Image 1 (cartoon, one colour):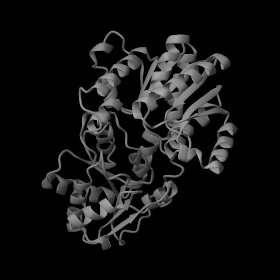
Image 2 (cartoon, helix red, strand yellow; image 1 turned 30 degrees about the vertical axis):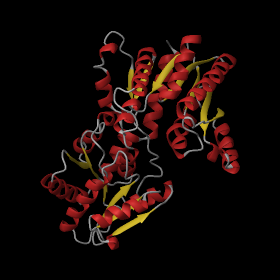
Image 3 (cartoon, one colour; image 1 turned 45 degrees about the vertical axis):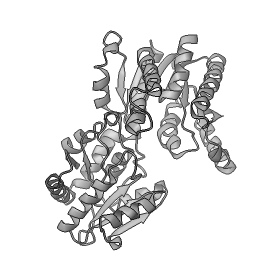
Image 4 (cartoon, helix red, strand yellow; image 1 turned 180 degrees about the vertical axis):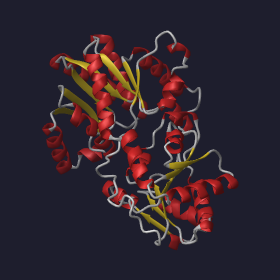
Length: 400
């Protein structure tokens, strides 16, 4: 028997993340079982009436029953606590009213709701943790290590892991770390690794590989340049690459940090004529990636990043583009090096950078590199693979 599912997301479905990382899966999973979705929508998104109506129709057509709640932001702790109370109360009503037996919680705040529901009515609890959230707050310098907020969040994390019927992690590296947690040694949960999915129908190249090699060599950078990213090191690497390929250009796709980017380009004396800086939508990102020769991004090597899986990696590979990145971030180094679709920097000294640049240039010119990248994207980041794994979890819990 296929048990009904209550999926709880603190991200709104009117946000791009909700549509790509929640609805993309659920629309397919809902075909096999009753599915209810609670999300927390932000006021600005909810104010777009035409988009709200369009999305509601789209969700309903897929068989999902959508229950959008209001997201509260300020004051932070009290607002989040109120959202937890509202989500838990409404979730309890849905579980009882529709006899839903599986609660799938995406990240920590929904997991707090799911934990209460498990304690009250004995539902199956999937903790889809998405990363080490409390440690991300510390590594992002938003919290102090060992501070009250951190200790409370880790206390909840422990309860989530001990109470869950399944734990979903973005990376195998994070699973290996959690298996060493002392408090889990006598109560080891079931783990499944499901990384961030990529829409490989969008992120694909019709050129695989009919790239024109006499045009300018293009290095692509996509997304944020602050907080978790090492943008200065990225620019240093590009400057070294330009010494090997003088006509090389840097194509940066970024939504809101253009002033900072221009400041950094000026600081490193990178000719603005060799840089294209633009903001674009999801479709525009995919189109631009197809015209890139190499993708580049460096991420801070901090504890929490062992549980991270950058979405852009699957997108670059889906478009047939090899990447240069750094070690210490989830399973990324293993994928790039073992599958021979990229180059991994172990440190950022100049000699290491030069060797890595030389390797990525040679790799980008291999005749089958685009096809190889595409296949790795299918093997690791496809939506179909993620749906298959989630469906297997639901089936296991339905038969227990």
